[in-house]
Amino acid sequence: MFIKNNIRILVLIFSFILIASIVNASEISFNTYRDSYRSFETVQVNVSIENITLSRDLEVSNLVLLREDNSSISLAKSKIKVNNSFYVFYFDLPSLEEGGYRLGLTNVNYIQNGAAKIGSFFAELNVVSGDSLIVSVRPAYIFSRVVAGQDAPFSLVINN
Image 1 (tube, rainbow, N blue to C red):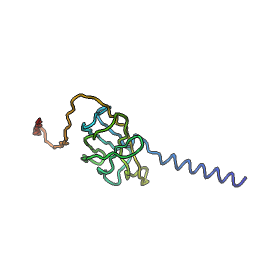
Image 2: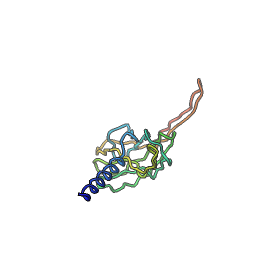
Image 3: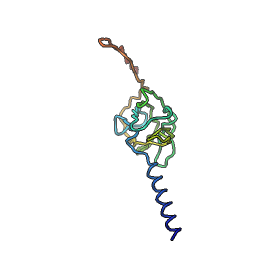
Image 4: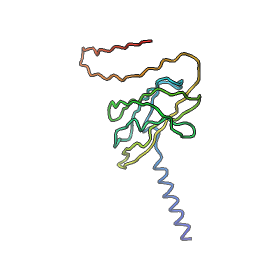
């Protein structure tokens, strides 16, 4: 009887630890602007951090694109940190088969409710096939501080 009660207590404690370690999807949100992309298109991902505090800045190595079998796809990624709670990542998709992929951040060091944690956050990214022409652009994020009445000069040049 004594052993059964101890096992129950251990199971309850273990269950509580598992439930407490589950990452809430609202803590980091991903905005990709579109539901699906084609191979070789440029993907821009806005990452908003809510309800947690990062203990280390996000790096390009944190961003991953995974196949269904959780194998990683090699990407040339770029990152812009706008502030402590907003990052912009962008990359050109390689040649991929049509299907669903997981886009996310891994090994994120953060503090939540006074406790230091390391977690992963994911969103879905769909790749579709098609024979329409695709323009792939190596984007740049422009951030300019202007005072009232001042224009921010900006030029976009596209060459064939």
